[in-house]
Image: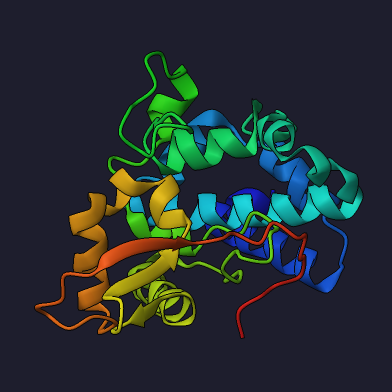
Length: 235
């Protein structure tokens, strides 16, 4: 069986590649649905393996679903909640993957400060141990303001996420010295706790060289462009 031979990480990468190139994706989708739950556990043991797999799967299915029916984006709240992705026999929504698995069971509308009260068994087994704020610069939800899509590999994923963070923030962050104001992506408001609150946001910007070490600016948030933009891949 090809799934066992090549592994789940390769499966997620192949799915994303076929989505990008327009090749047939049915085999990958069927393989994801049919994988045994124990195989999912055995092959995705480390945080890096989980990150790479679920980022690839999320980014692939955003493209798949919106290419099938772009009208779904007219009601984004509903679109992200539809349980139309099957992994190891489990029906998942895009929200399940992002907020349940990748964000360790965070509630969607709490700026990242609150956890779900009753996460499901599948989610508890497969979720990441902690939130890595860099995922927000790797997840592409189909909007023009989203970061570009990359093919994530567990062996280099930390470097890949560092690069995604650096590139996205360099493009989005603007510091105005005349008003002592820094404008940052709206993502840093929606998931404020993931970034460590306002202090964490400023710390990240300083680490990226976008603010001077002693800077204490006011924070403004850039409007998010929700226009649909598919096929946005990193070079």
